[in-house]
Structure formats: C-alpha cells, structure tokens
Length: 284
Length: 284
Image (cartoon, rainbow over all chains, first blue to last red):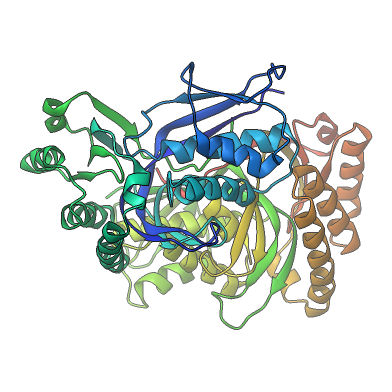
C-alpha cells in the first residue's frame, strides 16, 4: 500500500471562535483561502516498529494532533504507522499546516485501513483532532473545500456551513516574520471575547459584499482592531499598500500575505508565492 | 472583459427527485461524479446585437435554460449577451451538460456585470434555471463541488446537503447510445414515484458503505430496477462485466459508463475517456 494524499495550506484572514463542548460543533466562522501549496502525506511500508513515527520533510517531529487523529480513527490499540509529510510552506506561521498535515494523513489512514469513510467523515477526524489539541479551529473546513472559503457557521464539514468567494485564478505572496502558537491565543479567553466581537462584525460586512478586495480590507481591519498584528507585520502591510497593493496578516502566524507577486515584501525577508488552490484535499 | 469559466460534466448513477414548489429547495438526492471534461463558457465582446446569442462549439443553439438564468440574474431588460460554449462531451446524453453550460455561463455573467455573488449564489441561479426548465435536478450541486458527490438532501448548494466519496485518481470511460430528454422523464409522475422509491433505497445502502464499488453496484441496480436502462445499454453493461469491470447507465442519457479504460465498450460505439474531476466549477 502506498496511499498518498494532499491537503492545501490555508491562510485565514479573520475569524470568530465557537468553543462548543462538542468538538464536531466547535470551530470558527471567518474567511480564508487555500493555496496550491500544502502538505503531501504518505505512509511508509515498514510497519515493524513499535510506535508511530511522523516525519516532516525528512525530519522526525512530534505532532500530537496527528497522533490524536490516528487514535480517534483506529482506537488506542492501533498499529504503529510511519507517516512521511512533505510540506511546501513552514509549520507555525499561519498557513494551517497543522490542519493540512492531519487532513492529508487522515485520508491516508482511511485508505490504508479500508475505513470506507466519506470526505466529510475523514475531515471530521482531522477537525476534532485540531479542536481538541487547540492547533486550529477552522482550517480543515476550508482545506476540505478548496478555494476562498467563507465559514458562515462553525463546525466540521457537514455540520458547519461554508460558501466561497468566486475568484479568477491569481497568485498571492507572503513573508514570514515569526511563529505564533495558535493554542496560546485560543487559551486566552479575554482575547477571544474581543476577537469574536470584531470577527463577527467583519464577517457580516463581508457577506454584504463577498469579494476578494473586501476580504483583504476586512482582514486588515480585523488584524489591527484585535491587536493581533505585530508592529513589524504592520510595517510590511503598509509597505505593500504604499505600492498600491493589499495585504494583511495570516491568522495565526506572524506572516504577512498580499494579493499578487508583491516586491514590496522583499525588504522584510524571503517572499513565498503560490496560486490560490481551488481543489480541496484529495488523494494523489 | 474576457471572462471565462469552466464547469465539469457530471454523470449521475442514481437519484430521487424532490419537486418542491420552491426551486431552491427542489432538486434531487443521489450520487454521481464530475469529469475533468466539461464546458468552458466565454463572453464575446461584441454586444451590439439586439438579442442574446448562444453558441455551442461554434454552432448557434437555443438553450432556454441558459436564457432563463440570464434573465434571473440580470432582469427582463438585460443587455444582449454573446456566450460561446465549448463542450468536451455531447449535450443530451446524460453528462449534465445543460447544468454545466448554465453554471459556467452564470460565473461569466457574475464577472461581466460585477454582481459580486458567492459561488453558492451563482450556483443557485443555475440550479433554479435547471429545475424550472426541467433540464436537470441535481447536476449543478455536484458540479459546484467537484469529485464523487453524494447528494444527501435535495436543493441548491447551501440549502441541500452533499458529501463526497473519497477516491484515488482514476479514469472512467463511456459509450453514447442515444439521447434521452430529461424533461420527458421528469414530467412522468408515475415514473417518478417508482424512481424515487428505488433511488431512496439505494442511497440508504450507499451511505452504509460509501465506496466507488458500491456506487457502481447500486447504480446498476437502480438502472435495472427502475426500467430506465435500454436493452442495448444493458448489453453494454454486461459486456463490461464479462471482462471483470463495473458499468451502469448515465442518468439521464442512453449512455453507459464504466470504471477505468474499458475496451469492452468499443463494440458499441466510439469510447470516451476522462479522469474524474475533483475541482468544482471555477474561473479560468
């Protein structure tokens, strides 16, 4: 068996969190977009080891969210797995790479063990693992659908609700300034109250004019009004705007993204580029 | 403006119809899959004519469903449009090409007139046009999502519910034996009663084991039990099975489709081939 699956990276522009005690109903509303770049997961054939091993770009790592998903699907007595992840963008910088890793791996596990789950069932395992481990609240729902996804009601695919902004093919660029721990923000209940108030306000505004330009403007407003944006990230956003572009901060990472190939970002670090990805997670 | 959009062809294996008086809630449950092949719609720049002109593969045609969608979106006093459709598979043979034509054109209209509609809103215009004109009841919902789509609740995208069978990349092949008018079947209420009873039964069975193999077996059962399959189509299905393959009839067209490249179909006519398409309708 050599199952391989891909899940796109996902940049969230703004969000509001729902901490429902049922992890299938918990999640977030908001808006973000998938990239053509993301994570490819493969199972390695050697199952003779006595514990699961996860590698990202060849290096062994601990991903408790991924281990949780495996146990969720296969039970506590599950066989050891060897999962190789290839990531096109870094983990921890607001690309939803935790969600992409778990979602692509869940597709692989579904295939390896003939679990015969639908896409929504596979996504639910990834979503629950993310929510319980506080590594993400809505990336998986976006990554399951593909495109520029508006999450209008929180929860896993099939329980929450989504719609999509219809966009022509285009590139986005970004610069990574630093890491942010999603869990550190999600565990700050006072911060969440403020975030949710602003997140709900900008979502309501987006639904009145669901265009990419409005998404960018409202993401910027969200990043600044919540205080989540760092001063260096704000500098980068303003540098893009000085060149007539639109930019904001990837939630949650100290990463600034912009529409199009944006040279103004270069003074802040190496610039990444990807087209927006219209396909959701899938087998390769 | 040179907006261009693509919508995939969609082959339905089985269905049950809901004739709700509200066309947004009307539609069908069932299961089918999208192809990489489909329809590309482009607007032509010459708007100096005094009525809309629709061309399919260069030849002017009447598509009342498409004209209905234009009026639905732009009102009765809308400017004349020139829409060029390029179809990869024929219209009238069970590929959901009516739905694909209307959905791709609706994306183009959304772009041309800056209607700022979400994907679900665009799809709803196409779905309503299909339902009112009885040219299709569920193709658009599948074509909006992409992949192998189970329609678990009827209605347009965002009102109905879908899930997807997770499949590895694969090819399907088909042979077209003759045309069937979707409206002629949808207007036969006695036939619909029988179709719905069988369609609901096989959907229930599919949801217990949502795999591609089960989809094929249940589609065959549906085609035979409803009596919708022609004797020549049944011959083609049996020829595929005699070679160890799986096949059924595209709903609604006198077309037999099979999983994989299927040489056994060749004795029945020219064989078409496409990969299953995982992307829903999108701009080009």
